[in-house]
Image (cartoon, rainbow, N blue to C red; front, side, top):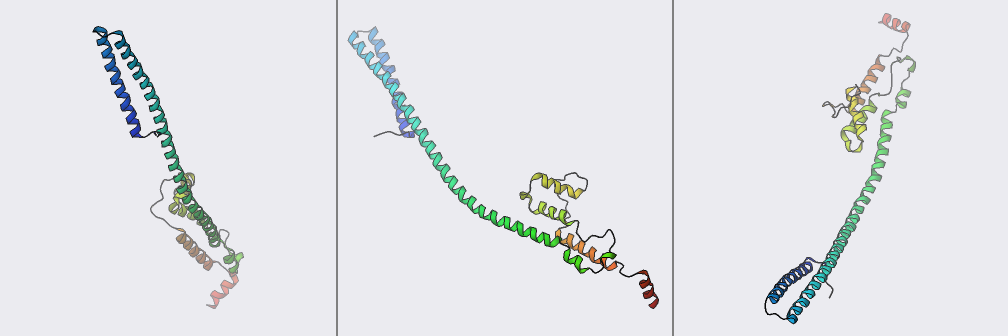
Length: 224
């Protein structure tokens, strides 16, 4: 039966080697005693043969120990590889799930962009105003604060989605001096509030636009 590199088999070989080393020490002591005593040459020669046999046994046990250690390392590599394969299978399953999420996420981004386009589109509003020529030169239908406020909302709510330089640029937009700020100010306007303020400004401005000539205004005042 072939031994494999297990802790028990390694301990067994190490124990046998230690016992062999102790036996060699005992044989060498016996040889010295035989040389000093009445031991004949044949007895001393027998001791030498036994010592050589034990030393040869040490060599074989060392070879066996090396083979068992190599086998143990092989088993450990196989175990680690099996763990790796199992981990990769589990990770692959998680990644497949996330791939489906990525498809949904991309579709959500597309819908979000379409909603932003609807929010920032002014074609319907401009078409509904019958007096474009009377609008002042500084007047703008577009909500100029909307793009940056949208970016700030992303910086607040979607920090993990954005690279560091983008977050720095968004943070710097609060200060107005080009210096990146690590954190947003405590007072947050928000997209809805920004758009509502813009809508109020539009309606207030349109209500005050002069749509009558000076003569018409004078006639109305006289009639009043």
